[in-house]
Length: 298
View (cartoon, rainbow, N blue to C red):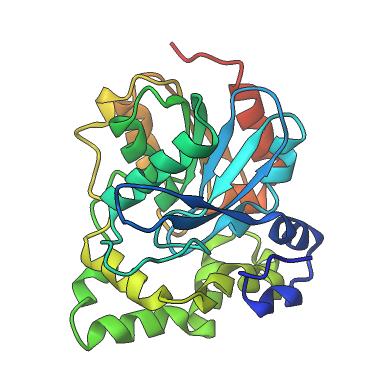
């Protein structure tokens, strides 16, 4: 059974991993300083033992992004995936600015409420920038850091330049269009056959949630995540950089930049893989993350 707060379209999922993860989605009312109202926050929690692994999804995505990776990690370790504030199926409360500061504040209180021990923080694409920002702000919470084809070196979002009326609405509707989303999905994969109907549904289910477009517009207007290039040297945690060698979204140059600036880091290339190793090569990606639990990078 699927939770009743999920869109009805969830019943059209066909891939077993998609169905299983969607059936595992739950929500909890997280009290934060952001609002007088608790924020109904969606997440998946599976597995037990070890330092908790926390997965952060990319831009305009949801916990369903980890449908293939999370079960592999949870088979050996306690694992969480959470919908960042303003994204996924987490409630978008009116009046709160949907930007990086709200995201990390909400994530901290999610962690404090439900986890409350140091974690291995894993961020994919924009989720990598969110993970970096969180690590810089709350270093005692993060034991180790994993960046998967991560944003955070270049500044801002290209969408922000179009976020003034009426283009803000038009830009959001542009991203909503099925053909545009299908095109982005195909670009993310090296193996285009993986960008199938189920993958496209996983990538668009959250668009049915209330205030999706308003939150997206507000986030884009905030400028999104700035470059952390000048701050990366402050990160003392051992950091694993996983990068799909055929990334057509961010390219590959930033992988070298992260490796050069992060003092305690290791870069591993995922061969024959695009922007989403956790979806395209989940067993390889999970293996590297699980091995990293026992590794300290000098």
